[in-house]
Image (cartoon, rainbow, N blue to C red; front, side, top):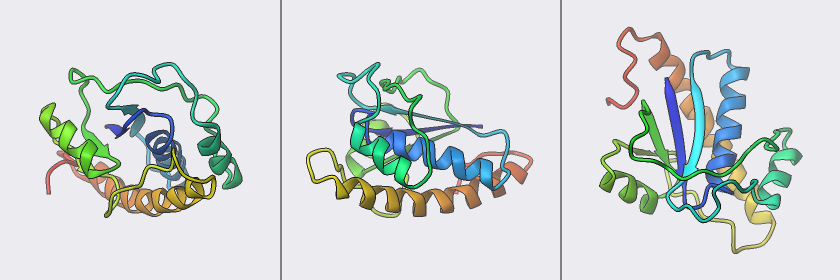
Length: 150
């Protein structure tokens, strides 16, 4: 199963989501789920994660050092596409992706705010990732494995 997490530039929210979801899936023993992230825009392609996002992850025991930003491609074959906010969701729907929101509410963009905004966003991402781990565990047990249905 391939999961894509999408935000704007792929240097804050979506890479944090990728790192957290991947770690939580591993911790829960859920195998066979490949998690990646990307942005709707391409201006950060190849860049590392925003240092404030990486620092927030480190403070909570995650490692985001290997991340390099990439732009979402319509041609990618993903089983599940998760948008960080309703604007990304709308863009992804225009691209023809059957995307869903990552969290119950929009995950706010911390980029232009204070450093503590990254910690707040990370807490929201962790909570949403816990719910996705449960859902993906259940989906992995289903014979048809279609997480985008229902």
